[in-house]
Amino acid sequence: MAIQKKLSLMIPGPTPVPERVLQALGSHPIGHRSKEFQDLVYSTTQKLRWLHQTKNDVLTITGSGTAAMEAGIINTLSKGDKVICGENGKFGQRWVKVARAFGLEVIEINSKWGEPLNPNSIKKILENDHKKEIKAVILTHSETSTGVINDLETISKYIRNHEKALSIIDCVTSIGACNVPTDEWGLDIVASGSQKGYMIPPGLSFISVSEKAWDACDKSNLPKFYLDLKFYKKSLNNNSNPYTPAVNLIFALEESLKMMQEEGLENIFQRHEKHKLAVSNAIQALNLKLFADNNSLSPSITAIESTQIDAEAFRKIIKDRYDILLAGGQDHLKGKIFRVGHLGYINDRDIMVAISAIGLTLLEQKIISTEKLGKALEVAETHLQ
Ligand SMILES: *Cc1c(COP(=O)(O)O)cnc(C)c1O
Image (tube, rainbow, N blue to C red; front, side, top):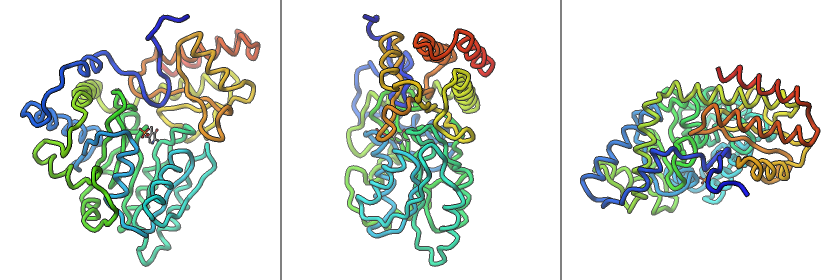
């Protein structure tokens, strides 16, 4: 039996929470209409703008990441609107489901799971839309289910060229992991959630809204109440929330955003990049295959094929023996892949230990040699330096 409560979370959310943030969470709640809380809302909002690299409003919603995704759709669009949805994984699929649930006309652009979306397919449809009927292009930046990053920089250029369509983007596992310059790329809606790169527990979601998206809000006729962003905007002008927010999670948010500012955006991105390279290259040195296309690896999660092993049994060994939680595959990928999360509060030690645990388990099962394991650790170390 392992020591209790020393679980290392290497899944793509919830991610590990720093001690400073845990302590902030453990304070007594304060009144959400107090001056003290208004100061806190002001402070977190400024920092959220910094994180999103934007002058736009960034609103905080109590709810998981999907709340922000749904809010992005129901506030800016109307029944029957034609939209493009990029789908190359579980979260792309979620966008399609939300859009259909609200009666939108969805043009799906698919890629095989494990491959990135083809920006040219989106470009073609936008260029041929002479009547400007397409109201939004909706997609996932980092597709957590497959470990693929989509080329949002290129796609956002095509959306801006169309002029009419909004970009509605799930940046849940890219914000706080890699560069998402909201203003520079002209992103209209950026949705994210607290239990990912933000390094705080689940329960908050964030949505950045451009001027163009606010204009679209005025025309939207989809039903909404709790997620009606107009109310959030109005109360934000007063550094407040329309309803009782998760007060303690806001304490945590203030602390985690402070930590992020102390580290600096560039350093945060570099840390994720080197962890991505260390994990993906060490995994290949262990004779395992990456599930995602090598040129489109997500900065926050590495998906690995499990042809020689039973992924679920393998994950159980790693959890029981080493107290490291890895993620499995979702839907038809269950048992076929496992995923190593390296998102948020992760350091080099976490990476070395995870690679060692994976390598030692393969060694024990006589799938690799000691030399291979040594080589893989050496490969990881080169990238971490
Ligand atoms: C985690 C995640 C979400 C949000 O899921 P919730 O469970 O609602 O927080 C959305 N998109 C991606 C890509 C994610 O990784």
